Amino acid sequence: MTSFVSHTTVDCRNAYELSEWWKQLLGYVDMPDDPNEPGHEECLIRDAETGHLILFIEVSDEKSVKNRMHFDLRPRTGTQDDEVVRLLGIGATQVADLRGKYGPGTGWVVLADPEGNEFCILKAEAERKSPS
Image (cartoon, rainbow, N blue to C red; front, side, top):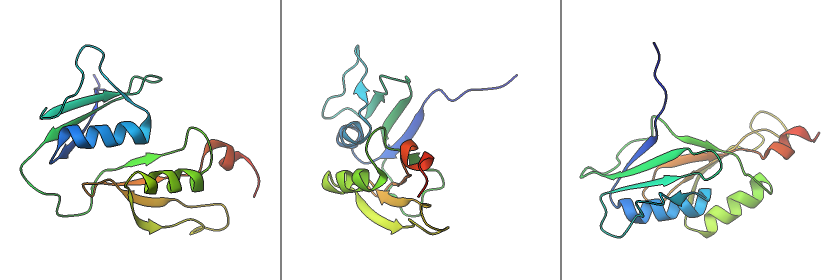
């Protein structure tokens, strides 16, 4: 017997605002029969392509330490650099730039969402496949 991941849950202070921010980042959408609205304490978003679900749940405690789990994101289109610029433009903050850490063409950029949850931006598939 085994289990499978039903959805990924993110604890937060404002479920609606954070779910709206991540929808911009990922291109996810609300559930058709349960749209998210201001004041909702739980907001579920879905990737229209894969069906992956992320649930944002309001909690009373503040984030106080580094995440033990995080998203590693790969741009669907464009480059890693393009995606970092786009995300900084919608309110992400840069935590660390580890591009080239393991030699030319390697590495990632650590960003944080508006509530401080960290995630990484990896190279796009096309960048990984082309020799640099």
